[in-house]
Length: 77
Image 1 (tube, helix red, strand yellow):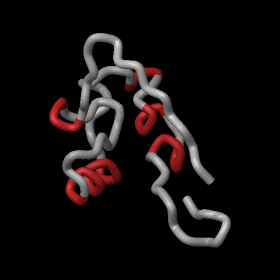
Image 2: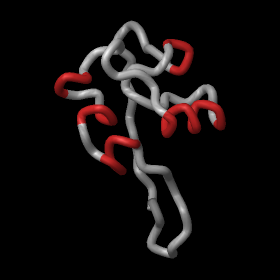
Image 3: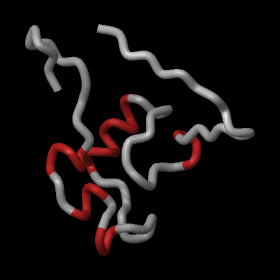
Image 4: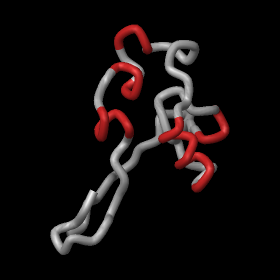
C-alpha cells in the first residue's frame, strides 16, 4: 500500500491482494487444516517472525489479552 506521497506504508494481506477462499481462509478453507500457510505468508513470517501473517498462523505470533482490557485507539494524521 502506498501513502499519498507515493511511499510504501504497508503491505496488503494475501486476502486483500489476491482474494479467494484459499488466501482469506473462508469457504471450504475455513479451518487450520484446510488453510495452510502459503509462499506469501511464509515470506512475511521469515522476515518478521513475531508478526501474524495469515488467519491460522502459529500461536507464537498471536497475542491474547485477558480480563477484558480497555483500549483507546487514536489515529493521528
